[in-house]
Structure formats: C-alpha cells, structure tokens
Image (cartoon, rainbow, N blue to C red; front, side, top):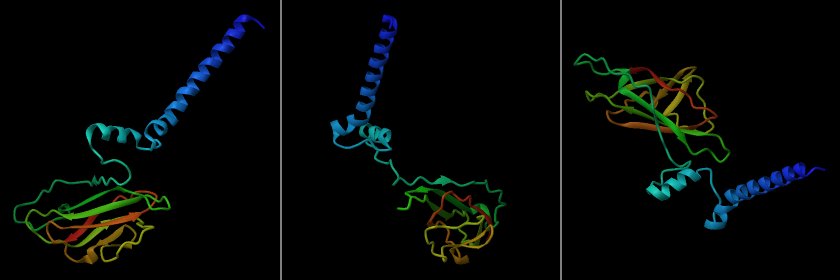
Length: 177
C-alpha cells in the first residue's frame, strides 16, 4: 500500500469524523445547552428570542384573504355578492393529523345592508370535523349555504372550522339583498 493512498484514507477518516462531530453537536447541542430539543420551528423560536414575537407554531391562525373584487356599484344600489368577503387559513391539525382550516365569512356592505341567502361555490365540500349546519352546509355539488340562508348583519362575521386533507376554494355564487 502506498503512502499516498494511506494519507487519503486518513484524511477521509478525519474529515468524516469532524463532520459527524459537528452534525451531532447540531442535533444534541440544543438539548445539552438548553435542556430542550430542537423543534420544527427552531428558526422562529430563535427569532422570537430576539424580537419578542411569540406568534409561531401550529397555534398561529393566519387567514388568507379571499379573492376580492372591486365593487362597481352605482350609488344607491343595495348590495352585491362582492360585499361578502371570505377569508380562510390553516389552523392546528386534528389529533389524527388531518389538517384543519378556519373560514371567516364577513358582510362588509358599505351601505349598511344585511345580506341573506348567501350561497358559495364549494365543490364537493366535506369535513372530518362536524360543522353546525345552521352556520354552513353543502346543499348540492358546488352549492353551500351560509347562516341557514338567514341575513348576515352588516359588519358581522360567521366563522367555522373544517378538517380535510386539502383546502377547499370557496367563493360567493349568489346573495339576496
């Protein structure tokens, strides 16, 4: 065996040992120094220590703004389906691991109108978590009824949570002014 081959083997072995040492230090280090293991949100946790912001992790509820369309209303018109705004975002999953989503349906009518008969396009909406049918229910394919068809008072919000493996796209299909 040549000395060049032996030097390569030694160099490779030392490099591997150093890499393994730093890898173990990365994994075991936080447990050794802080007494608690690294979580999935370790970067957010580190950032919160600096900024004081504690809004991280699965308990955070960020709601994604729905498709908003600018209202082209002639002054004096009562209301339109653009006066209903839908926000939804992920929330903590069920204990079984099924993702959950929070939906907020708001009446933002600027002329002070109460809107009833709110129907949403919702595909084959279904949920592993029970939803009060007086708040939200699927009537047929792509037709869901909000608030049991009763008026959603101006400025008020109806919200519910559903659980499914994916997020349903929800949009307003019709309203009664």
